[in-house]
Amino acid sequence: MTFTNTLAGVALIPLPERFYMRSTGMVAKDLLGRLIVRKTSDVAMTARIVEVEAYFGEDDPASHAARGITPRNSIMFGRPGIAYVYINYGVHYLLNVVTGREGVAGAVLIRAVEPISGIDAMVKNRPVKNKFNLTNGPGKLTKALDVDIKHNGIDLTSSENELYIATGAVEDFKIDKSPRVGISSGKELLLRFSIKGNPYVSRV
DNA sequence: CATCTGATGGTCT
DNA sequence: GACCATCAGATGA
Image (cartoon, rainbow, N blue to C red; front, side):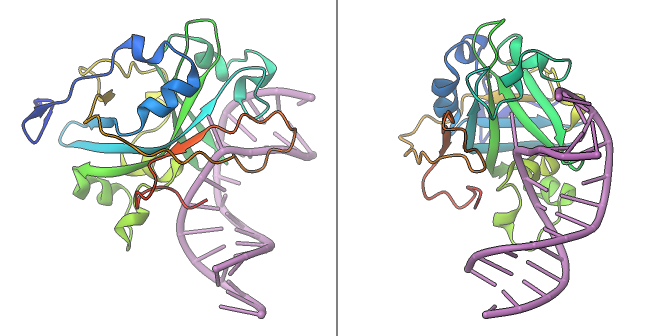
């Protein structure tokens, strides 16, 4: 079964590698409004990115890369446009996109998305009473989109892949910049962005 | 509404 | 052996 990568008749064009080969903060902001495309053997899902968070290298105490390269975080130092997926609290998979040029650590955590198509499949993956609870958190959206560790290292710039990020409609998004919680070193970089007022933005 | 807790596994000290 | 880029459910006000 093959899918034509379109949504409402409009082609879902992947963002190119050069999109990600910029400063992590810029990429984070620019990812708002873009579309995550997830294709399975029998279903296609799309969702709009509505909240992101930037993680840098050794200057960012909250980053996995803060203490240099390790087997787990090595993808953060690699090519831009690649997915960095890891399990956290032993329970949830978190989806990031690697940014910056190769050799420099950086990634953007996808914190919340708005379901656009294939919503029935998402609900099947992650049953909820309230639809606004489906994908309004980093662990929730991976469950709904069936994203897990097998996507660690996947190229998000290719529409051939079962997971990629498409351009989406460019609109005038309002940015709500707020600090990360739980960091008190004084060096925190405070780069969380969301589409203000979107009902799928996470609540913490 | 706010605050707490258990689940659960990989990574790093 | 401690620490988490989380979440759902429980409890109390």
